[in-house]
Amino acid sequence: MMEPENGHRAHGFSSAFFLDSDEIIQELDLKGDETFMDAGCGDGHNAIKVLEDYNHKGTVYAVDVYDASIEDMDKYKKKNNVENLVNIEADITEGIPGVDDESIDVVLMVNVFHGFKASRKMDEAVDELARIVKKDGKIAIMDYKPWDVPKGPPTQFRSSPEDLEKLFNNHGLKMTYLNEEIGEDIPEGKSHFLIMFGKN
Ligand SMILES: C[S@@+](CC[C@H](N)C(=O)[O-])C[C@H]1O[C@@H](n2cnc3c(N)ncnc32)[C@H](O)[C@@H]1O
Image (cartoon, rainbow, N blue to C red; front, side, top):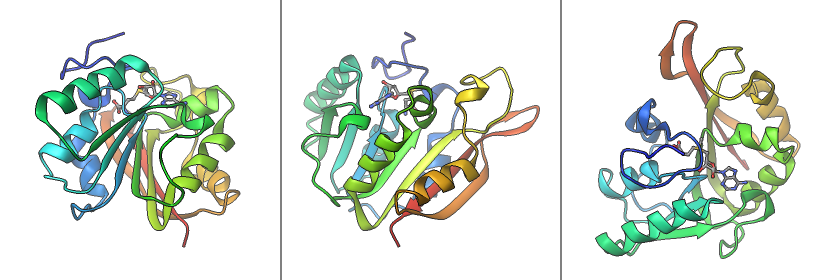
């Protein structure tokens, strides 16, 4: 475990070290009143940025399976008296308790989805995302390109945007946006893609 910049514990490598949070959040086009979820939040830096720098007034959910990450988010909430932050310890592939069907406007997942491929739980994860997102909501997945490069997850656990499109289509979701020029500059190009899905 590596200690992220904000001191919160994260199970995995926090993207705060190498991805530009603003570049990601600006892709989401938030108005400020949405119900937003940082799914697989880790140290929670994206959720915290939305709350602090984007002055978000809607409810912000931070969800992670790692108990220490959620403990740290609870400490942050208490210390800063953030009423619109809801932290939930949950395995996304088993369902997120306390989150109603079609209640979330925007779900963001940064560097999480490849883990579902590794655990062979991609269908379960997409089912849960489809359950919680509103009819006019969006699911934004940012992950490593399926390249055989040293930084990031093993190549066999990476998905291409086309693979994700097929998978989400099978769950009744449609691709609404794709950016393949995002992330870190590596010798091969940009390290990541960001793909969005919705119900319409
Ligand atoms: C590589 S970290 C990325 C964290 C954060 N999104 C970021 O960009 O820094 C992956 C995170 O996903 C979480 N995670 C993995 N599988 C999960 C699952 N099934 N349900 C909820 N969280 C999960 C891990 O605990 C970890 O915090």
